[in-house]
Image (cartoon, rainbow, N blue to C red):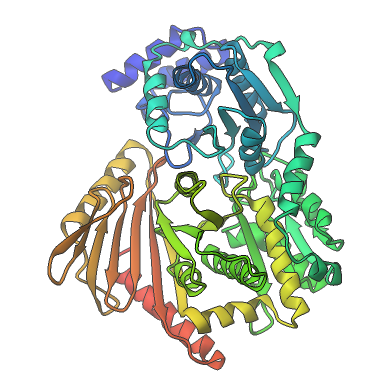
Length: 575
């Protein structure tokens, strides 16, 4: 084994971890499972765009009560420095994953042992409600234990600041620094103080649901369309706690829940991945929708910050929409209803991320509203909302990975509120005699036809991380000359904060935090973004192609044209 790995293994064996964990480590040593030990101990779990996230198991590079405890202790130490002399309050929640309740209780115990008041959700709850709770209860920080839509082997620890948003610079790095100062597990205060832990539940639920209810403007329309057939699946996650409740609260009474996926279950027994981006995870809901001739299908991921939807297309066949299409529908609806109500002002703005379709920018600009792009990760959208507080008014935001936010009382993507607004959209369109797909084509006719593809490449362990690093270095030094027959005219390097206009080699500064992302833009508007994950050895390529659409009847042929174009881009990139 590597010397550092060997040192970490021995440190854990000599610490006060439980006997079962020690026995597991000793067994791996006795069996000379060096690859497994190296992957488990070669580094410490780090905060990326999603916080602390990893495979559950023993080791410094694994999610377990000790790495959770060290992260919580590091966060506690930083909170004491950031808020000296203040009574520190935190909120803690968890999703349906295996060990989530254990990790959440561990987090609460460490916080309370450090003298903090802990508002502890007594049962699983959605991530956006944790964000809401931080603001509602006046907390300085909060944590939700979740690995979002990752496979069942994973869990995670999302840390939040006092504005209800995930940690951003400098707080994220400062917390890591504090965690790294902890040289021994025994430095963690694991013995909780029960008198400092306050359980919360239904009362906060009602405040959160009332906040979402106030976002709905078309109550009369919903009353006319209250029998709208809605199919919903929480995919064994937290959505079951509040999605049906909010749909009923705003006026819908014909909600069909996929029974096989209704109960929270960390094994996610009916799916390969508990991710509404995956067609397989949505198959049971889509089958139910077809059987009952539903109006809309909605699915939330395990911690209910993302939502995927299915609708009937222009051939009356059920189809899943991607995150950009759903975002376009939400953006258009929010802006249009505010315009009709006379509520839009020059102070309003909307936000999406640099890898989200340019269609959302075109829609926002079409309504005369400012549109901003941030780095990937909703914490950056939340940071922009905070920066503009008192100066501009946030309407909504979104990202291609199925996350959306309406209003500013939550500071993370919110699938509970999104489900409510999506149902409102469907009811509004049905009241006009239109389908969701009719509306989508109308948007394309007005703002241009866009098609997106996502290619995700995963490698394993330390060697995989090095391979992805080398790939990004190659793209920086030797970017593609053309994509699908169109010259690359712009290279945006967010790590070096430079945009290069290739024809004349002029440069511009990118005024965003540094991030290891590259974008290539061609003459005809094709855009490719290459983005390695911050938490695992994975790289994603976001491919967007566009064309004009001047007649509804040409939709299929123009979409086929874009499909062919996107496939050529993939070939040109050798993916």
